[in-house]
Length: 205
Image (tube, rainbow, N blue to C red):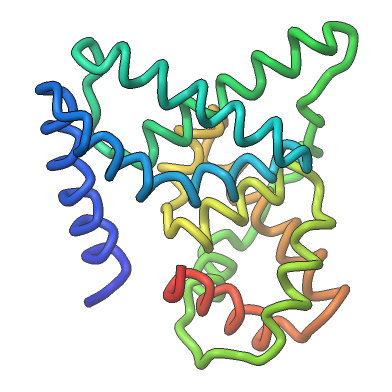
């Protein structure tokens, strides 16, 4: 089963739980929340390292979604939950720090060889023993690069889905991923080994 098929099947399972939850099945909603919690928590670490704040934010989000479930239409469950959490976190940060800009402005440089980079990034290779080093290096990336890497390699989203979630265009996603990969490969490994690790994260997550 390829990545797209796996994601589609997982979404069908989540949609089934969501439809049950919409009909008032609280057990189904709890099951859905359990399946989404780890993804939501890991994604939120792209914005803050405050674990208690993340836990509270996710709890608040789940309550909000449950209360509004009859008015929410979802096609891709994980994308909806991630987008909702992203918006909630940004609103909270702006409310607490009105004079501080959270969103760093990325350089506007364009990638001239987008197709070559995309082909390299998607290549399937064997699992590597240096996962921990890559995870640590990812944690040091700028927030928006880290967010794009998480969505691409840990959640298996394509660039169009990431662009929709991050509210940027597809080229900006490609730029973020290119900068992240360039930074990672200069810190730790040759590009071929780095791609092995990121591909493995997609398969194992």
